[in-house]
Image 1 (cartoon, rainbow, N blue to C red):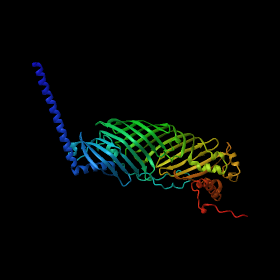
Image 2: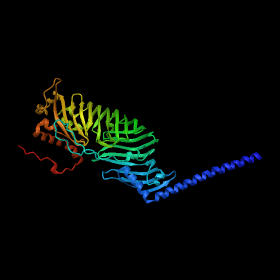
Image 3: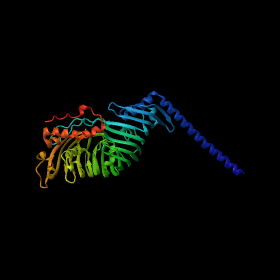
Length: 479
């Protein structure tokens, strides 16, 4: 009995000590929480937090509510921001974990940041204006680029081990990003980003990123992107990016130098069996169809399109180029069936990227009998300056409608093919060509334009059954 009583007294003393410690810890937590609430009520600290967010995002930031929670966290809801360049940011909630002592000293030093449902629209003001390329028969004149705008501070503020704000943990939940040029064209668009990044005091760390869907330059759409993230000092790597695109695959790797001015970035990617036609519902502006394979290497500064340099090559099989609809119309008018039902067996593009231009060193397409090439320049402002050439067998020039104009084509080569050169200008959205004038001459070219207009009239009549009398051609006077 005495032994049992002794053990019971010892247990009660131990329990009392534990409860006392727990009570003191709870009381201390309440004191810290109360102190944090009092600190947050100070207008100076709320202004400091708002200014820090504005500086990090490079825009004027406002929020609806700021409150404290357990573990010294600050919850900021209804965050919105914008700047004069058109960039916008919003987030359902930001949770930040500041260091209390630094806040008491008038500084905002964060150890953890969590952003729920953020949406960032970044307008790239470095993209050249939509001015036509200089008239140049060689089609190789460079398009002058504008002075790059300052990179937003957001990346520098949030990336771990930057010295500005040593964030050790960054979490993004269900985020969206739109990187567009000054005219509203998509450079990069991603939806439902999930990111978790952890780092230690030495700058080493790891994490993961997943993106539900996205699009690149209105040309490639992808789904289900995933990759590991590796941090090694000032280098952030995404070494094993995988994504589905047009029922094919995209494999890529990205490296980002966070301690160098402008945040240099390099990208290597490959396309494998990507069905471009499968992406048409998502990218209506896509003018290519077929099965694509290719490789690309790029380098530049993060979020500055004009700094990008690199090279790429692309092969397409069993498809068509929707930008050649004019050739199909010409084929129907001149009764060249191979043109009116144009199908591409293979297409190849080899390009170099520099000085805000895509230099097409090779752009060639082959059908059963026809070949088409169009080397030249595509500007980052989407303007075209291409030297095109159409080659076809001499037998195709014997039709009744084309015979009066076949002298416009070159003499037959050793394979019996004749060709005609023409220019493609305008923009990717509205390409223009002087092919008709090259075939028929300036005067007769107007007649071809009328023929094409008449060719399209039935389709217009379907849309507007009650056409005005003025739209009907006048009756010819009998001879």
